[in-house]
Length: 360
Picture: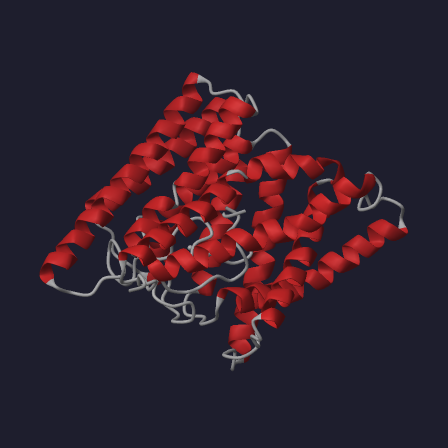
């Protein structure tokens, strides 16, 4: 008798775990990829990534016979996704610049504090209430930013831009019902016009590097679109098979890998003050994760439905807007980064609309 492959069976969970690990591992290793095309410059890399991500997403829709415009019945939905695509392109560009200019640790910090920022955005914009533990976590994260600012002599702006753009992106995507590939296409349509125009200007002015450094450089720029799409598809599969509890905890794998790469591989300095800042952030993340898991267990014991720690509104330890780096709600152009362009909105099915956030 064949083993079941749905999310309710063990084989389905095993497959979902492997897919989730694959997605977050790929997002975590992104700091090793973008330096390979660093001669192109951050803005050109971003433009190439936007264009080729759209190309591969359109091919995916064509192969799957998926009409990406179906389900978007209002101008507001189109405007929201196009705006989200523009916003997350800022996230992409910041991440690429950070990775290629010796700020991998700042990029990791941004994705560590993104769940905390998502909680704060929920309070400020959605009037959500926080527990005492969640307020403690927000306070510790704020202190960490102050410590790091004093240590480096200025705001860790790259980390803050990454966290803010991802958090706001998650809010924009809330309630928009669309599958991962279709969302990737729609979000990419608007910014691709700008990207193509910029690449055309580079070519006309003789500054383009697309064909200037040999076929390997060209291939790596093209593959940048595929590198964006593959972890998104892995994540979409994991989101359908795993409890959102698991998704929410897996999200920290990507910034942890980025931190280790920045520290051990790229040789970025970790001064005592910087260690203190990161330790405060890690304690904050542990508090949020523990509090969310305890809340989820209480819901399980009470027999109420819950999509993960914290219930249907909470896609992971990061709070209502966050399911992980580039996760279901933010599995769009950002996914760590990303996580991809417009990912699934739910841990149950890709088009349910339930809010769920590498990756770059």
